[in-house]
Length: 154
Image: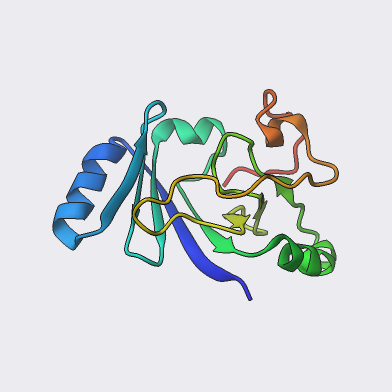
């Protein structure tokens, strides 16, 4: 069963927002990336990723969430996704946990991954990426996004 493990929000200053959330709510800062200035926090169960506004150049969404699913669970859901007309996109190959992502009919992004860092000392990627059929080069971080991609802006 899919488990909610990741919430992501675009911010003007992810590091400042991370410091605020840490002080206000005792959320643990797991790590920062520079560049592009991402901050990753956790309450011990949920990964909170604060993204710079430049994330919109990759995917025009101000927020998204992620579900923890094994590759086998994802494959088992593929017929359901096909029936719903949902296209799976291969996750970018830059160290983020994202194995695949999809968009709801209204354009909301959902990341799927077998692991999300939620504990101190955990970092980005914990296992090898799996190759998924029919992934476009931009979905692997290998080039610009295709104008005719199935991803619809919100």
